[in-house]
Each structure stands twice: as C-alpha cells, then as structure tokens.
Amino acid sequence: MNRLVKFVARIDLGFFLLIAASALLCLGVVITDFYPTAFRKLNFITFQDWFPQYYMRPLLYAWILLLFATLFSLAVNTLVCTIMYVKNTMRARISARKWGIIMLHICFLIFLSGHFLYGFTGVSEDAIAEKGSTTDLSGVGLSLLPLSVEKKVATVYGEDIAMSTRAEITVTDDRGREATIHPETFKPEYALGYSFHISMKDKDLTDSQIGIIVRRGYGCHLFALGGIVALIAILFYVPSLFRPRGV
Amino acid sequence: METDVLFFKNWIINAFVFYLISVLAYSLDKRRIGGMLIIAGLAANTIALIGRGYIEGTWYPSLMVAELFMLPAAMALTVVFLFGRGKIVEGRLALIPFVVCCGITMLLPIEVPLPSAKYQIISAVFFLTEALSFALLVIAGVLAFACLVSSPNVEVSYSRMILWGFMVFTLCQISGAIWAYLGWSYPFSWSPRHLTSASIWCLYAAFIHAHFIGVHPRLKAVFAAFGIVPFMYMIYHHQIIGLLKMISARAT
Image (cartoon, rainbow over all chains, first blue to last red; front, side, top):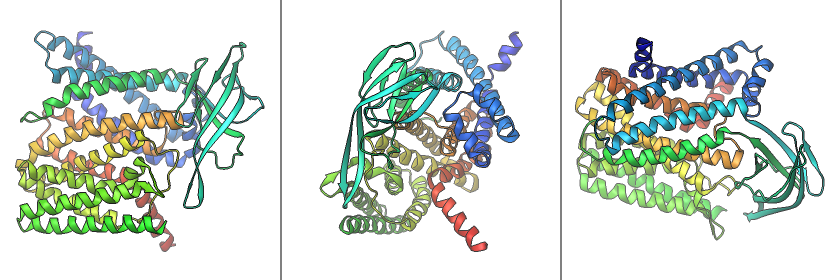
C-alpha cells in the first residue's frame, strides 16, 4: 500500500500525465473534426446519456475514454502529491509562494471535479419562448411563460444591431413551484435550481420572442470556487516571481 | 464607416512603421532611439485601438482589444520591458517574433468590427490576458530555441517568462470561462478552440513541473520552443484554415 502511495505521489508521474493530457487534447482537435455533431452534443447531455448514443464512433469513443482515464489519474496524482507536499511543508513555516503552489494545485483539483460533476449531472435545454404563451421544457421539467420582452438595439452605420435582451418570465416546475425571473443577455438569473441564460442567437426572432437556455449544472459552483481559489493563489504566488532567482 | 476604418488604418500603419524602424535601430545597437521609437509605436497602436472602439460617437471599450490587433502591442510591451530590465540579448531575440507578429497582423484585413452583445468587459479581460500570455510564451519559445542553438545563458529568462506567461494564461482561462458561462451557459465547451487552450495549459504546466524532476535543460528548451506551435495555431487558426482552404481550392 505504502509503495502504491509513493508511486502515485511521484512528480514525474504528474509530468508525464500532463504531457499525455496535452497530447490527447491536441489529438482531440483533429478527431472531433470527423464527428462534429456527436462531439458538440457533449455540451448538452450528460456523459451517461452520451455514451450509449454514440458508441458506434470508435475513434471518438476511445479518445474520450482515454482522456477520462488520463485526467482521472492526473487528479489522483495531484491529490496525493498535494497532501504529501502539505505534510512535508507543514513542518516548517510555509511561505506565501508555497501557499500559492498548494492553492494552485487545489484549484486544479476543484476544476477537474467541477468538470466531472458537470459532465455527469449537468442538464440543459434551449428553446424559443414567446411573450404571453407557455413553453414546456420536458427535458428539465419546467414551463416558461414570458410576461414581457425588451430588446435593446443600437443603430451602427445604418444597421440595427441587437445589443441585449431582457425578459420577465414566470417559471413553473413539475412540482408546481413558481418563480418570476428577469434574465438579460450576459446576466443570467437563478431559480428553482436552474440558471436561465438569454441566448444570443436571435437573428430570426420576432420582437416578442426570446431564445433561452435553461441549465442545471452543479459543477458550476465548483468552477466558481476554483476560480476564486486560483485568483488568491496567483496573488500569493506572483510576488515570488519578482525575486531574482531561477524557476 | 469609411472615416472610422481610415482612422484605424492610418494609426495602425503608423504604429507598424514606428515598430519596424525601432527594430532597425535596435539591430544597429541604437537602443535609446529604438526604445523611443517602440514607445511611439505603442502610443500609435493604442490610439488606433481606442479609435477602433469609438464608433459613431459611442465608445465600446471591449471592441478595442477584440481579435488580433492587440498582439503587436503586447509584444512591443514585452520587448520594452526586456530592454528596460537590461536584458539586451533577450530583447534582441524578442524582436524576431515581434517582427513576425507585426507582419502577420499587417496581412490581416483592416476592418472595424461592429459592436455586438458578446463584447463585454469580461471579454476585454479575456482578450487582454490572451494577448499578453501569447507575447510572453511565444517570446519565451524563441528564447528557448536560441538557448538550444547558441545562447545557453538565456535559460533563466525564458523559464521566468514561461512562469509569468502561465500565470497570465491561467487568468485568461478563468476570464474566458466566466465569459462563456455568462453568455453561452457553459464555462467549458466541448469545442476545438477550448480543447486547444486546455492542451496548451497542460503543456506549460508540464514544463513547470519539468524543473522539479531534473529534466535536461536542452529537453526543457525543446519543450518550450515546441509550445509556440499550438499557441500560434490557437491564435491564428482562422487564418491558417482560410489559407489551407485557399491552397486546396487552387490545387483542385
């Protein structure tokens, strides 16, 4: 057991896993070009729903499984390595730089967990809703009733350009709970465990229609936490970069 | 519209002229003149970018830094910083990617983008950090290549630049994730663009870890120099794909 922990905690293992992850992600750019639709679908359905639908694409399937395995191994390596590093550095006074390093690794773990959680639990549905009429989103178990739609348009060089859309919407879930939200382009609102985003794809919509994306992604909370930890880590780490010494 | 495009075009050309003369001056070891000219170029570049965001009496700050016209300014800033810190060899080597970047930018169609809902303050942060990380990491790659070929004494400089570049690139990823979440509802999208940036992030993270496992300095330099390839692809992928399509159309 001890030998296994020692093996998993090796920095060189982390180094090679990072290279493997980088190479796989790079390879993904080429592979996914062959299956753009199947690949894009990953943004809208969970992995457990995606796998049975697209198992007939062996190259894409093998690539994503390999990527999962590599990233999972990297997460385990980072976790064990960070624990060992904290254990070793706790014996002496920890400098701001070391805090920065520890937090950067923690935020990497948080981001990876966010991705996994998002990939396995996140659901999303987009629809076009019309003012005054109810739109059912069966995939997420909600119905939307837009009460008002306001569109801000800027006229630039004689051309009307949609700058933002704001709507007042009553949302009802399948348990009968109701909430009124006011989402705007780039200002999503949260209600009944979902986030509501106004879509920017509105070229063919009338003035009373809105494109709306409804999403439930618990991983987002982890992303937000990871972002905050990363910013703090960078603040801790950056002063050490001004000191004249090597890497 | 013509006036706005003309204003932008004139100032961006002025900036490139200043940049090119400054490169000449640096090459002739006239560092003071080179420094003054590159700063003049930076000023002209900034005026061009401000003009780019000012459309029909309204100022759209995020339009200033959108797309690729910010890159030469970020490169110039890095060159000024290197010479300012007395890193003469590094500064001179940095002139190579700087000239290449200016050359590529000159070939781009000079047009003023229309404002759009997607250009927000957070997108400006994203484009700014992307340009700065590009400048730092590409210049570091060139220094690493020089380290391999003839100047082993620049190793510390390129390693530090990669550390800085990595930090700025991490900020770029975070701001990009916030921008994508607010606008498109997901912080990471399964798309070639996001895969490329994740791949680059992993590559440089591996480079930073290479120091702790005693990787040979030459191998590290190969690593850092190789990093330029995916980075260039990420920044110029539209242009590269356009060029490939043009070549393939001509061939058929």
